[in-house]
Image 1 (cartoon, helix red, strand yellow):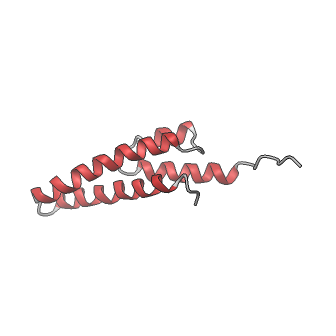
Image 2 (tube, rainbow, N blue to C red; image 1 turned 90 degrees about the horizontal axis):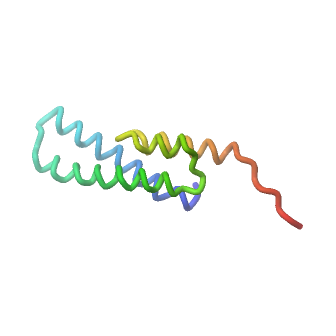
Image 3 (cartoon, helix red, strand yellow; image 1 turned 180 degrees about the horizontal axis):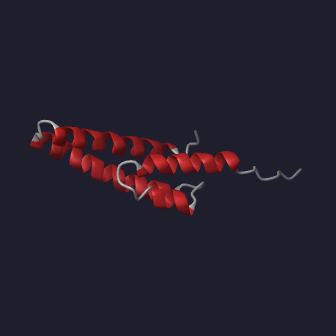
Length: 95
């Protein structure tokens, strides 16, 4: 994992986990305290994911667009960025 992709990885995981908490709370007891805690966490993680995907040096247009999908978009963008990094050829070095 590159150092540049670490904030995106953390934000995407936090966004997805907070969405699961919000949906689980909605489907079960619907406690307002859980919603008031997890909602802002999810919103901040979502915004951070979108910005981090746009600033990633490995970014592609598709990866940046995928990050805009709420909940799962950050994870999809990470998958696309890792795939793009794996298929790219390293630059030749000058000797």
